[in-house]
Length: 296
Image (cartoon, rainbow, N blue to C red):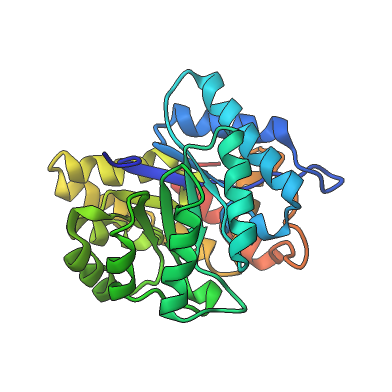
């Protein structure tokens, strides 16, 4: 059974005016997501600024997400980012996030001290044997400078609790080969909003989306319409979001999307340094595009 089918939001982590985690705003953001049809909450990923959180903050953010989902009365999974570049620390964090109620652990490929393909297999196998929850792998070479190859995923697909892949290489040919090699043993999720429909057409289960922070219903419906057989409706929505998508990645993620969340009226605060706020030119363009989209 798939972790989820549809749209998982790679949700921003809000901070208050002193730079501390803003749990009240986070609960409001999650309630909005659930109300709008989002199918999974992905907490403490790249868009959630996980690398700037202390271990204690990281655990508290995920705990808050679990509580916030329960308050909605809906049963959707909380997928908790637990990755890093130290295998032992990845295991420690995974166990801690299990204890606070996460449903799935997401592990990005190691970065900086990037390993070999053989090292990736050993890294993930060791993690998988040390935690109880299902695991979503996360391949984003533009961030990590390490690309997981299809044959590596094929080997990891043999591990019982490695069940999903968030694929953000942007290489649709690689995604196709991954699905060809792994079949039903790994569920594939797009990690790029602009490739959602393409990956669905290859057999993907959905999207882990940045744009869902501000247009959750449309991102959900790209998948829902496709699965209902409404290919034209899905295609129209996929094309509709592209202008917003380009602006959200006109500067370093999550700077633009966090600015957009603030424009919607949520007190998400600034990104943590070394990230900065978007400049005035991009902020103006964001406002104009969001107005044209009907968000403001």
